[in-house]
Image 1 (tube, protein in one colour):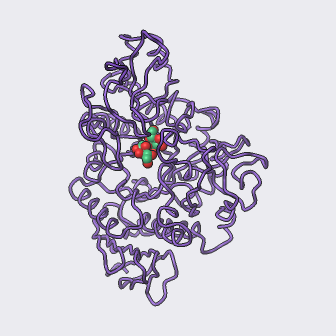
Image 2: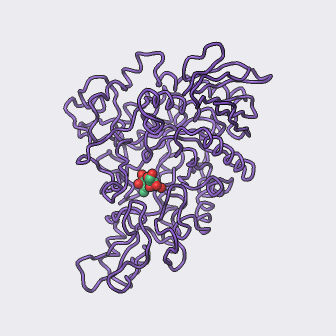
Image 3: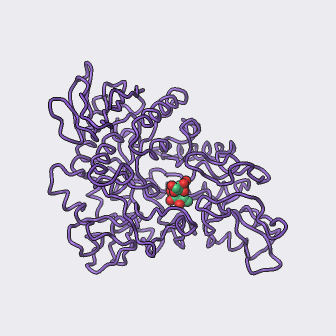
Amino acid sequence: ALDEKWWETGVVYQVYPRSFADSNGDGVGDLRGVIERLPYIAALGVSGIWLTPFQPSPGVDQGYDVQDYCGVDPLFGTLEDFDELAARCHELGLRVLMDIVPNHTSTEHPLFKQAVAEGPGSAARRLFHIEPGRENGQPPNNWLSVFGGPAWSRIAPESAVDTEWYLHLFSPGQPDWNWDEPEIWDMFDDVLRFWFDRGADGARIDVAHGLFKAPGLPDSPSVPAVIDGLRSNPLVMDQEAVHEVYRRWRRLAEEYQPPRVLVGEVNLEPERSARYTRPDEMHQTFAFAFARLGWEPERWVDAGRRFESMRREHGAAPTWALENHDLVRTVTRFGGGTVGARRARAGVLATLGFPGGAYLYQGQELGLPEVDVPEHQRRDPMWFRGGVSRDGARVPLPWSVGGDGAHGFADDAGAVPWLPQPEWWGRYSIDAQEQSADSLLAMTRQAVRIRRELVASGQFDPHAGADWNLEGEAMVCRSGTGLAVVVAMGEHAVELPEGRLLIASAEVKEHRLPADAAAWVLTGPAA
Ligand code: TEU
């Protein structure tokens, strides 16, 4: 059962290659670094990895500005390294998900360069949203980019003749593709086939609810920004036309044996994201209404219930995640310090125990807090455009206690990591946590192992319906298979439901779970 539907029965581990392991001492992680340390990932017991982009890119948005969709950036290695990585993963029973970025590309993509060179009216310009400006040198409409500032830039800022603008929902280095052009559809079919033929088991799709814009690109009447939390501007995202793309991709994915898997980054309210999670579109979409939460019991219950109705009405299992490379690390988001650390531990257990798919982001199993990267060392384009910096969740992993090789991130003792690690980083290292039976790393391994056993015995089912309630100070999710996930979110210890305690994130005494902790209890006849 685990093998066949591995993406939802098993756990997927998100690897951010730039910050995972550096094999050549240049301070940037690479594919060979991932290959060398795959045994660590396999020992977590996870079923697969999702690799964020490693294709050739100027790196304006750390690889989400893709210049060549079918290559490997020399910073990360070669196509042969990718082939070896996929083969080694498969030997270890791990699947590999690519990151595909269809909403936008890089200003360095050959087709965009051609569009710039060939000028107004050219066929190449139709592949993007390139429009004349309005009077007084104003952009074509009032849309604001996700990273701040206008969503439009001049294509040739110096030219008095070529006064057209191009649309970029993200940074100016990321021009949006025009999906009204059939050529773009064909191009992405080829991109998917390229990686699926090479052994990739599926793809995470970046800004999957993007791609299409309202015809005529009208001004936005009320909310000029493109995204505000989970509320996307409907003129700019979540257009009906996008679903046809995923129906086509799903057919393409199913031409393969085993069928390839599609997971969508659909950053919308549950009711909207459910519409993408269907037998003829994507296999799963991340539960962002949950991922963005703080330590707020009422809102956890509310999110759980909303995903429950999505399960009922659309047959779509939620995909739980609390961290990724865009979000503030849970230790910090849940209060920081020792309290935040306890809650982040509970968050891992909750993520793995709620019925649905589960993703963990590298370093979450170590309880890494958000790092306050000094301003002059920040690299995030969102920061440069006046937003928050996401760099603090992207700092290279600590592998060893000592500072050499950037706390063991690099094979080379003198390597300088691309984002600075704090001097206390080694305390959270893998080496340090391997020494301790109550480390978060040890708990994560144990929880993943128990989840596998529960899947085998039918006591964990990602599609099982669940009841979500506040029971006193506890948030309790009781799944139809008899598994209860209890999270003590108040100030006091809580009485656990009757049944067999399987695992807890803090010590349980007399069947009482301390505050800021989570536990799994098998209830009913199954216990
Ligand atoms: O993120 C899309 C997205 O919606 C985020 O920009 C989010 O709103 C923001 O990070 C605030 O939390 C994806 C990638 O995950 C992100 O790293 C990229 O920067 C972005 O797409 C553009 O490709």
